[in-house]
Amino acid sequence: MSKFEFKKGMKVEISIEEDGFRGAWFSGTIINPPSKNTQKVLIEYDALLADNGSKPLREKVDFVQIRPIPPRESDRLFKLDEDVDAYYNDGWWEGVITQIVVDCSKYCVYFRPTREQCEFNVCDLRLHREWDGVKWDAGLSKVKINGTEVKINGKQENPLSQGRQVEVSSDEDGFEGAWFAASIIEVRGKDKFLIEYHDLMTDDNKQLMREEVDAFHIRPCPPKVEVGKFNQYGEVDALYNDGWWVGIVSKVLGRSKYKVYFKTTNEEMEFKHDKLRLHQDWINGKWVIASKVY
Image (cartoon, rainbow, N blue to C red; front, side, top):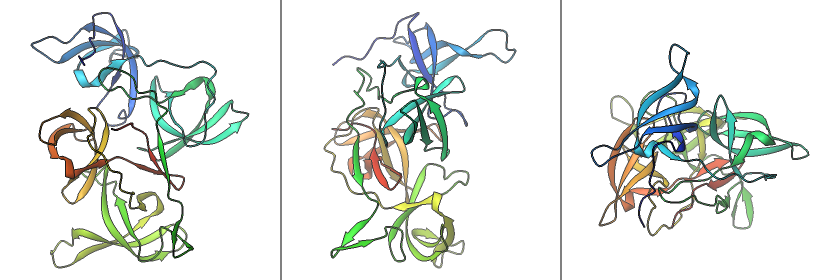
């Protein structure tokens, strides 16, 4: 199947790979389309202005940063845990419905990158869809894996209890977007945990590192999902430097290899199939897979 052709004057959406803008899509127009000599595209934003504020911002972006305007349903009612895009600050930001507020006219949306929750009118929401480079995923294939409680020997057990294996994230520079394997050593109060990493060592390299983390930076280990082949533009986690880093499959190579693009660092690296896993998010006690992967 051939790639979608972007033409001059076409309305598109653009992603911006800068801090504070990642995960959002902004509408604009193609001024100069990609060519055989370059994959750069000159676009003009509809709502974002140049530094002097007198005219719309124009800039060159990579081909993988643009997509057509997604289709939109009329009179759409949303469900709990459904992936949506919310219109905010002149762009569409991906989130998850966490609460139906008023008669399906208002919803609370949780944003994974910032761990924030905001309230939106239904007119400012749309069904989240994924562009695979040729067509739009219908957005209705989300898989939910209930992980609130785990049954062991017929009993209910808290997945974040002492001794459980978990994954831990960090807000430190250079570690954003990564999850590291660990075990819970001690539960401290309502939302604090003493954990020990499985692979990260102390500065003197003599023992495994321990630290206290809060509930926003810890989650159960995601369930394994068998994937025969990852799709281009699909969201994955890549095993690198002892952690799982979220990225996008930018190219499918031969012999079960892939190139993965990391938005947080603007880097692209090659990985074997067994070093990738389907990206999942732990939201409201459930594992959610937003992307359709074959």
